[in-house]
Image 1 (cartoon, rainbow, N blue to C red):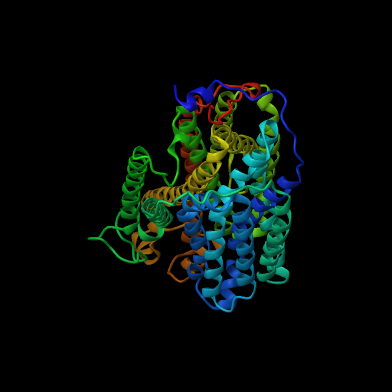
Image 2 (cartoon, rainbow, N blue to C red; image 1 turned 90 degrees about the vertical axis):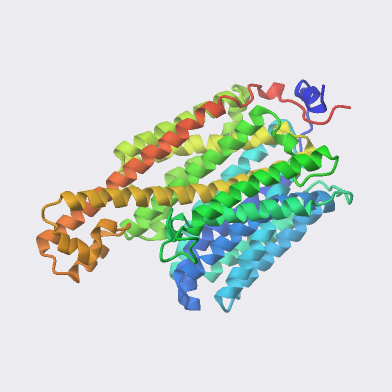
Length: 546
């Protein structure tokens, strides 16, 4: 019987040391620091475009660079933390995150801003596994479950605050003061880090550079591929693609090569483990079906969240032509619900096993998306829509906390960094996939819907369609469409007919897209049924048996 099998049968003693929540305040703020920085970037794009005199696509490189740095380096960052020591490395990277905020505040060109986010992403790649390792180091049992839940709530509340505060500052003062808040948060986290329980690194830990290179390249290619499915082309290369491969878009090729490299990484890691060498990430944290189910559930729920976070701003800012502040208000029911649920769901651990909560959570997200697909309109402030976002937020908040907690409690404290790196990789990749798939799906459905409606509409002659390429329209507001049609020989009746088609097609696309997302959510119910069935007083002690 292996050590992990023996650990499965061992339970946590009823009496457990209770520690001060002061260290957790610093870890909570560290999660807020990263999430606020990410959420502040989209709000700041307009200001950067104006200040630096660059196109929006260039300014948005700050977002891409940050995400790529986190995803590509998080596994190597976990091993670096094990080697140096989690408290020490945590303080160092929080200080470098503060440096990235200074680069943003005093940047004189977009290059400085991109460099700032590269530094922030590299820092976050170590902060992400550090949070898990430091929670495991400082808390046990019910306190640990609560601490894990607070990380999910920190992501939600920082997203809301970044939109509200960033939107207000961007309108009244400018985009740079937003990163002054990032700097203040970094200083606060650094100060709180001195309350953390000290640990010692293991100089004997070696970083597998081959595996780090393979997984880094895989994540970069997968992220770039999924993120550019729309702009580079889903199958054939579009004019916006940087190059073509025999007429094919590089986006799906990147995805395919990334998948192959990912499989190569797992092969190499198993080979290295079998040889008795230290792998980049210990795959024993995924040895049981319940742990693999938790990772799959995490991927699905984060991808669904990313898809919804893409869809709502798309309709509010692009279709309705409203501000980021309006977007924050529209998403408030969802984000606040995620915040509250992620914090309070740990109370249900005393009554229900993870399996029950996981299945119920995915039933809620499926029901909410199904409901939204029928009741949603182009106005996001109706009561039925708010109710749907509320129910989805309950399921989302419960699931994010639950699946993360399952992984943390299932692994020995020494492998907490590996759990953190898996969490970081899964969440970053799922976010990219969710956003990209939602965008590609909605644009494809819209193109098909508009194309069919234009062909069937008697008042829109082929000559007018040819002038504006109306059968290939992307998501645009009614005012933008009228502006385009004003430059043609369209009559007032034809303009109104085209606007009506645009409105109906957008709404049908939104409803059908939400219906597809409900189907994706439903597919996760079965894997969720493979989550552990233990209760808190039966939580396995994953420490190696002596």
